[in-house]
Length: 472
Image (cartoon, rainbow, N blue to C red; front, side, top):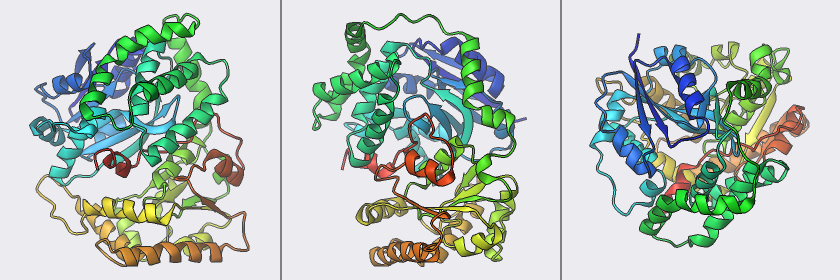
């Protein structure tokens, strides 16, 4: 068995005791390290990196996460250097946050990273910033996995205030503003839940307190004061008292939330051999789409990079063996093969994610700049040869180039949209054109798939380019 350590970080969240018990049950760690009441978060990160680990992987998690399924089978077979776990956030829907599976070599590299000075990325997300630097040095990639995990449910009001004061500071670029505004639209529909009132108040208070052009030092100072500010501001709302959380409350919520997954073997959207394919190009919201489909009961896989998929793509076989256990595939693995998939899987649904072309070109240039088509694979498996082979194959097939070329990319963008819409022009029930980056979401997606409206924010996943703008 692989040796797995758990690092559990708590500042007294309402979920702390239950979250720790669930984590121990569902991770089965060899050692548990609890970092308790260490503020600000950058200090907690510093402490977790000073631990002397003796394991293969470390699961770093916060006490606002309630793990509701057995993660050990995945941990036993996982080899990825870093896996970000998708969770169900009360305020923002399906997002990857709060539980991080990190291979020991990445942890060691993080321990060697010198903390950046006057760096807004580090101020806002210290753990993420150090890990990003470490992954870049190791030429390693981030991967994603869905689990049944509650995030930010059942929290104390003052913790909600602190979280959304910080959330406002992290939402000061175009894309992150779109994500926050979308979430706030959802909050307006949740009348009677004090949590959303606290979140709205925290956002507005922080917006007024910290200017858009505040320096990293000013932002860091405000973040450090947020717990004190919450203690002053939250009582002004005259909210109902909160009792300690019970296991029964959590279990009832889990049963209601994931009933489809716990008790139904085939989601209604994909019965009778039908599948769902996300055929948008990279950087058009394909991760957000994958997460949204998952929330609707469609178990789609985003950009698979396994050896079987590589062999099938190389042989021109678009039947995809992994569709025996998945309900669909998204991103460029399938984006140009929609005519073949349409014939292989009749009556399937195709979703073309799009976005503003200039924003897409900028995002692609940034995305490709740190992801070369040719990179060495060292003795630890960094670079993962299968992943690199798929990257080269799909870049050549979809984009016709290995390096970013603005003119070529612009042509591919226009041509792909033209080809897809022309192919499905007489079959509007088969194709949905979805601008996730522009704010479209559940309304369009649920209507297209014929599913009831879903009661949670649309999962607009974080764009890496958005944070870069903070220090650009």
